[in-house]
Image 1: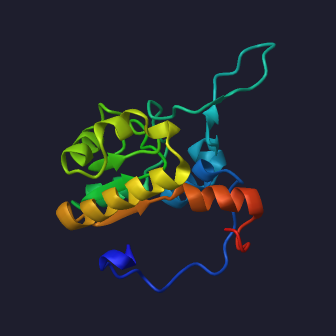
Image 2: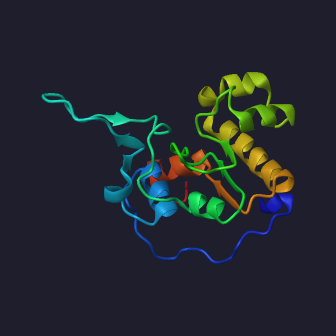
Length: 178
């Protein structure tokens, strides 16, 4: 983003803790300020309904489940601010996010459709998005984030790159590879 002329904040977290080793649980904690015990995102998904005699299962499609507490995006929206998520934890039912280009991009998604019209990716790339190499998806998400910052000017943009996330899971945070 800084290469596209956007200045990034210089204040960063130096000390902190992980709510979980999984991305979505940590994103939900950052977005709500509460632990997974309160927001319900325990892994890269949520626990499914308890079925007697069956093991617990994780449901990865959390979009249809309401978040039990307000998110940062909800609070920003309530104050009249524009919000956007790119490659970020998918907003859950009832969330107020103006622009969403999710990790599981869809040819039917409104932000995704506008990204194709703007030439940020082809219709074929969008149709195959989840099977594209991670670095290619990161490139698309970066293009979309820059486009949204220039054209939509959100007050809050939540942006996540999968390549960095994957490398940190593989080699550890702060490792040379990550």
